[in-house]
Image 1 (cartoon, rainbow, N blue to C red):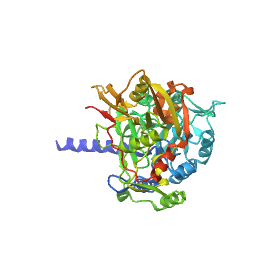
Image 2 (tube, rainbow, N blue to C red):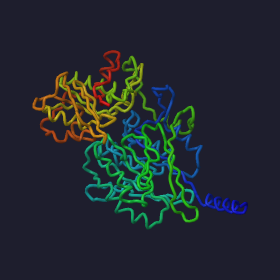
Image 3 (cartoon, one colour):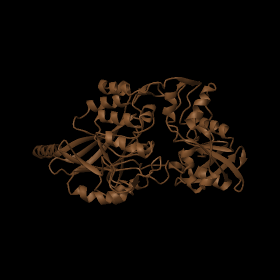
Image 4 (cartoon, rainbow, N blue to C red):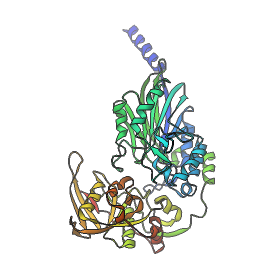
Length: 496
């Protein structure tokens, strides 16, 4: 019996010796958030690239650092430099590869090439081409193979196909088609691990069906793509598997990093498994790397710390009540939009505001962090049937894509998660299908972009720009007019 135990122990040790672990770190949707931010719930500092660098220094030395896109815009530093400061910081962090997100086009076609040229990391996007030649742009590759810890890891990039600004210079092809085309070429090089780096989410309930293909990567290529690293929806997803493929998403704004440990057989090189761990970047736990902090601080934009006004309390992005899907910040934005336009209903997309508005003095920097976009206001007339369609397009079991001023909605969800029994009041009165209503929203949504896809069915000749103010301009003016208080939630309620 003792001899058998010894033999079993020797066998077990041989299995352990044959297993090799390699680490991949992943971020996404950093959106120019270079610095630690005060967490509104705890008051503690969290996030930023100096904290990320500190985590990387304490971990394994031979790692891969990857990002799923949207580094170009979101803060004053990123916005004013048209993404170039973000690229500079990514270079300093020694990212290995990044794919292309929809916000790479926030500065339109002329803003794309300078970011590509400045990048010292691999820009991977198998489905991204020049429109006139159907060749990939300079500095863009479909995939790249890295060797870390003796393990060959193939990273295939898949760009988001819905740029924030219309493009004439570039074009996108379906992600799954390109993945099918490129995989045989990748597999000829015998990688031990294949990773898809995508700017879409496996659990996207914000952007319609844009991310539906992500789960199909596992279904269509079982055993051929081992890991899918996603983003775009700002979700946190860890250790989700479909057909043995691991799906990971790391949230947004450089608040976290995902650490993926990939195990391969040391003897055969065969992929064995992958597991992920979310590492929140709390400064009190991570510290900050001095060299990266110095670089980040050198990138700070001057002249944006002027106080515009103040708030009496935090205007949060979430109500804190699971039954109320709207929130104080977006409700307030809708209110000032309605006052500016004089329409029956003002609609704002909840994805347009990025972070909470803190309590106390509010600076221009704060406002750009909250709403970095230059969208103007568009108004139109629709009948009640169309208005109801717009409202329903934004509803799901646990979120609303839109917030409203002049409209309230209640609805139920059946056991399959489908929305039903939608009840809408317009300025306190039941919505009438044949009645004409005036509505307004920001120009991005009015054009049918992203979560505003339903607006594409409204003829362009019905849409008119209102004044010259941007949404951010309205926010700044409202702050200058006097102290701002939270607008109560409860305009979008799911009946449990």
